[in-house]
Image 1 (cartoon, one colour):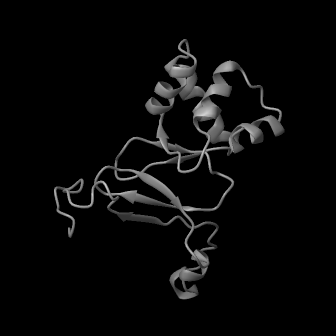
Image 2 (cartoon, rainbow, N blue to C red):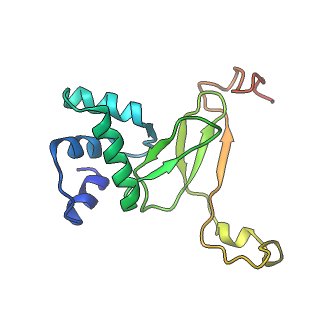
Length: 148
């Protein structure tokens, strides 16, 4: 059973067939599907599932804090089920593949006090960009080669 599905069960969230299959689709490491990808994968398991059910369920899961909506570089929103596991993202600038990464050190400590301008920093989001092995030699999203 996926971590997300177990969390939803633990909180007593009503698991209809549609909600269950969406949670199952979002299970696993390095899952960052768009809503359309979630719908396509869910429809393989439950052909009658509607696009509206997927969008509504994703919205509910984001509101509950059970998944995180990730938007990068003007691409479609992606949904990350690892909301309860601190991590950052590594994104391929060629194809957009996304992986969860857990860098060493405290990212809060990387911002010196004199650079906080009186802000009380509550969270840090760092996104790493690079080239995945499949895109290593081709142009990136901006038409640049591997050396940019």
